[in-house]
Length: 329
Image 1 (cartoon, rainbow, N blue to C red):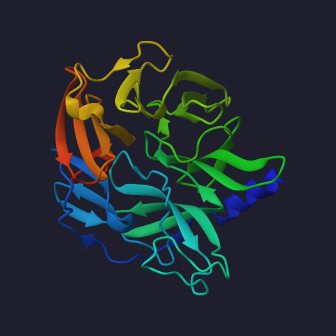
Image 2: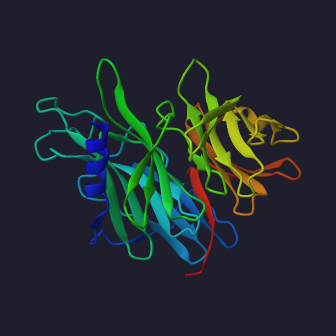
């Protein structure tokens, strides 16, 4: 069964939609910029905004695309010229009656039928490519060289088991390879690669407490290193950042040296941290998303790792999702 399922993935991978809607230049209210950087932000109505020194744009939507209430995290490629995201489509959209005044409400007769794919958008070519055909596709993570993607997929459950795997997608060939022993990785939380491309870190799904696990991609061996959620591996490889409610912590990949990234937490750091945790390309700073539960306003905070000093860089703005060096192309 699993062999047929993987074969079907290989045959269906890499569908190209060459006529995506036009790029939309935007002012991107609630965004900010960093010198010589490409930044990815979440926008309204499921929009993704890319901010560069050369201008800003909104990533175009595809026909029949359906935003998800619990949305997996997109990823910005290391070169800043591609975005990967779990895309969900309503296959019977023309038959299902939905009330736009009631968010998420649809007439259950007939019930909506969805499929999910991993979508990769090229900024230069203004095209989406779709990979796979699944029930659920989780958060995306580009490999350090930008040639592979990691993401969790689920394709239905029975009473006895669930058909789910952490997948590695080769973007040059379209081939998907399941990672052995990865069934417990949580699909919707942050995934992150080690800089050498040999390991992935994610959230383990067993037990009542969130746990950070490191997975050896060659063997599938999994090691729990700390309690917490949404790991983010530093570009230098020496730290994994993660969150514990209102705190951002860092730990060495071997599970030693855990500490807070802040030298002294300001009063405004008492609000909950949200995903993702974003490293600067040089590994010297972190961007943290903070949500104020009352009013649902979002702040973005920049932390200097050398000093532990935190600065509010955005208030009541958009979530920052990725940070890459700007190539100028």
